[in-house]
Image (cartoon, rainbow, N blue to C red; front, side, top):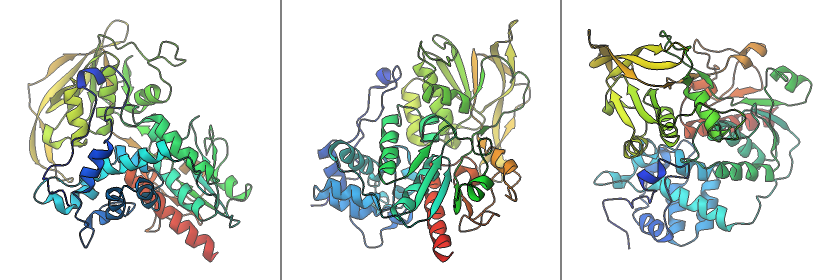
Length: 463
């Protein structure tokens, strides 16, 4: 019998006053009974609009039907047909603005918890399945992937399934890209990412870490000397942006990119860390920005013992972060100072941050993005006492690959220019994800990786 409840099953989670002191995963996942109950809410409607809302076109009603039949491994295999990273997507995809946005059940109630069901299925597979993915027969073609984030891993997985000899080059010492250095452990455990990477390796994908393409070797060398017939650039957008206000060079000012990399990848909060970060216990931290990365930086700071402010120039309704992440931050004690904008960071006699001067804002007419433009209120300046400032204003692609690759065209923001097939201005060189669009979501990067794999396959097959 269909479950006609208007509300989706709540996601079990850690108590806010417990989780804001640890880095364990916040969401605990559905029980089997909750998953079965939620799956029964799916009407398996005729046109499957949810599938059209998924950038990697997961067969959503099909995998949910498998859950209702208690065939959890079968459900996983349905997802894995089009997604190389099910356990990741079930945790960090913004389903509310993608697949769930188009769910018919959302018209008169809450949509089916598609992301929560995907996580349940992926976690069940990881816990119960011992069978390694089959290694496809080689087709004799070699492809290089630059970057092991969601775009690169997806492209690698799709090509490996078709028998390509794939090598992924990662600049850092651990594969996963933004999944390991950007997203905190309490949202995406690194063991989950490693499991996904290990699955790709089992299919024959080779992963080379500590390989900064453009420094160790160039794309031209990969193709001319190492025999790669095609290259996919999925190097992300790791160059942080700043406000260029006085005081940004003081001690205690971080980019969110640096802060999260040191916390997530290098475990800088540990006493025995080789790259320690400043002791934030009992300190006050201001995170400037309102996106998901700002929420991650704020919630990490809270777990390190700080009192945390999120300073954002628009209002709560305009926050670009996922609603769920904002709600979790509020529950954990993060203070939101919206309609405020920093104009200066002030330091003490030792050039350490002591406060941040802000000005109050009000919302005017909509700008080009459609959001109401924030306007300063003259004479409303005030000082916010803080010990550290984390700038979370977005990122842009690193110019290294462009500057070391002949004939690779980029736009004025540094994004690699591609056509509708993901092809760059260089024959055989494709790109996708944040390296093209600037900072975006994991699932959109995965969609770009799928397109890159499809286009490379067509290119080499015709060649």
